[in-house]
Each structure stands twice: as structure tokens, then as C-alpha cells.
Length: 357
Image (tube, rainbow, N blue to C red; front, side, top):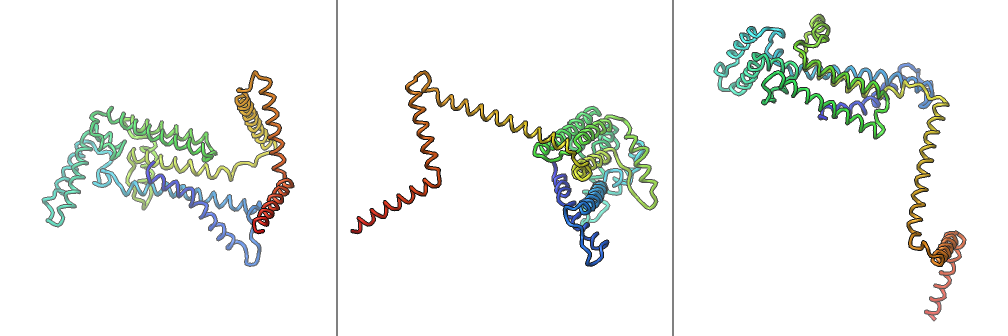
């Protein structure tokens, strides 16, 4: 799991509680007049207010993480948005526009002080030209993003799809392992069904996106047209790989949001449910006691093995064992211990007196 996801996880588990405390305090200071008592922690009114405030904080933070992911995607950019290329342009149009961009970005057009930055810009345009003018590499770039630039051994569409599917499956498997480990340690106990269903749906969506010749219908007919239709809001159209990243982060945040909200909105346990839980715990305790008793009997039989078959040895062992138990019980008695302590002190005093005389 990357550092970005770890930072997001830490934010999810620490920030909502702090913000809820502050927000509830501010809410009481606004809605309750000075001098009137505030609801005390543990009361039904306080718990209801805290549940509502906590829900508002969690939903707001979920929307913020989605916006933050979108903002990060826009900051990183892509070949189309960086070079102002039409998203659905054909190969000839892209070649013409990219040749013009190569000519404008050539380092020979800049002075000595700008050679380094010009060389970097020219290298990015050259990389975009090599990627977008090749139909196979263009297909791979739109579905896997800049990661495909490092896949030097991939030559055909099938090679890129297999490499991308392997990477996606590894990501999903690692997410599943983290979820199982968290559940083993008592975390993420709520919403298990929806969590696994969402993870499976996300995997199917990624595989569908990377194996189709066209972009997903959600992107083509809903999301990108909606972004372009919003007045005063300039947002470059999403590429398939950007939608996949946004879906991953949204699902990751959704998992944690459900896990944190479920305890607050779950119906209180009934008496029958509590009794069933208690019976289950008692059954577990009985099994543990039975197993412990059986182990003790086996150990006792193992210790008794050298004396088996000899009545005289067994009788002597029983006498010694009874004697040891009696002495141990007597020595552990507080009155006996105090008497022995006084006798020892008296004897030591007599020895000291004889020695000094």
C-alpha cells in the first residue's frame, strides 16, 4: 500500500473524531443559551447529537477525499490536457498537432538559459508523439496511464492488457489481504458483505475498462458530458485510467466510511440477541475448560507413568503427594506463616543474645 493510502487511512481514523468533538462543542455554544446546561456524555440526547454530527463529518470527509483525488489527477495531468489535444481526434489529426508542438518546443528556439527546461518540455512532447500516434500504445495509455510507459516488453494490445490485468489483480489481492488482516484484529467488522461486493464490482469494472475498444459508457455518456456542460467549470475530460484511479480511491474511502458509520446507525441489540451472544461465549468457555481438563489429565498420566504397574511405588507416591499437599496448605495459611515468622525471629534473638554473652 502506497504512502498516499496510508496517509488517507490515518486521516480517516483520527480526523473525524477530533472534528466531531469541536463541531459538537461549537453547535452547543450556538444553540444553547449561556447558563443552560449542555447535554452530558452518555445521555440519549448527547448520543443522538453526536451521531448526527459524526455522520455529517464522515460524509463531508468522503466528498473531500473524492475532490482531493480529482484535484491530484488534474495536477498530474495527461498528454491530452497538457498539450491541449482533442480527446477523440483521429491519428492524422494527432500527428499534425503533435508535429507542430514538437516544432514549437524544440530547444533550438530558446536561449541558453532556457535550454534545460526546453529540453524537458521537448522530451515530454516527443514521448506524447511516440505514444499517441501509435494505435496500440494510445489504447494502452488511455487505459493504464503513464504506468504503461515503463512496460518496455509489451508490443501488442494483448501484451498491454495482460500486464494491466496482472497489475490490477495484484492491487485487488493486496487490498483483500489488508481487509482480512484488519478483520482478524477486530477492525472493519461492519458492512462486510457490501465491502466484498464493492471490491468484486471494482475488479470487474477495471477488467471491463481495459479490455474494451471504447471507453466506459459511464465516462462517454454521463461523466465527461456533465463536466463539459457545467457553466463556469473548466474540467478536462477524464481518461479511462483516471476514472479507475478515482473509483479505487472512492471505494477505499467508502469502505472506511461505512465501517465508522455502521455502529452509530445499527439498531440496538435485543435481549434475545444478547442472550445468544452470551450463550455462544459460555459454549466457548466450556470447550476451553474441557480441553484444559483433558490436557491436565494427560500430563498427570504422563507423570504417573514411571510408577505404573507397581502397587508399592504407587502407594509411596500417594503418601508423598498427600504429605506435600498438607504441608503446602499449612505453610500457605496466614496464621501458620505468622507463627513460623515469630518463631524464627525469637530463635534469631536467642542466638544473638548467646553470642553477645
